[in-house]
Length: 112
Length: 115
Image (tube, rainbow over all chains, first blue to last red; front, side):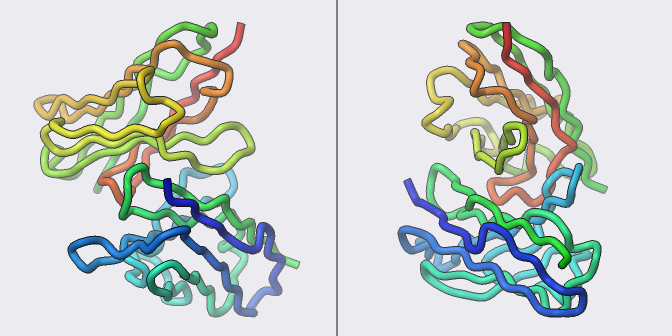
């Protein structure tokens, strides 16, 4: 199975400052159709997860443009350009290329 | 508006069974693959299972293979997860999600396995 490794585990950030989360996969996530199925999810406290980013860098509808995704192959990053209070929660990457699907362990974003 | 409403969660004894349902609305259910994802208390997300549009292909995590069965009824816009031979480590909130890329999620239903 693919292993998804996220870092850091915890990310204290100052409001208005940028934040970055890394996600690495144990094998390439490029699918035979040429797409790379790497997704990012946000889970706010007490809520269900919500997808933010699909296929590495595409924002889902309604997702603020301060969220961006980048990367290729096995190395990916979620960046929040200016953290706001509502961004507190746990962020997960997930590979959607291979079966079984696998989530990263999660990164907890909190305000300093 | 896409809505996914899970139900069926319960307190079950080890070795017991339960069937979860996910009622879908706001989209053409029969046109999309569907998935189940779980989250143990205080833990991260764990992918459980997925099913293609017609049900012809199903996929399972190693931790549930042979014990859980995913199915769907496109006439009822409903996704199911039959869970047998339950263990304490199956205790979790179970979410259904639209597509194999988890585009939308339901609110979850809690399954507790305990004697």
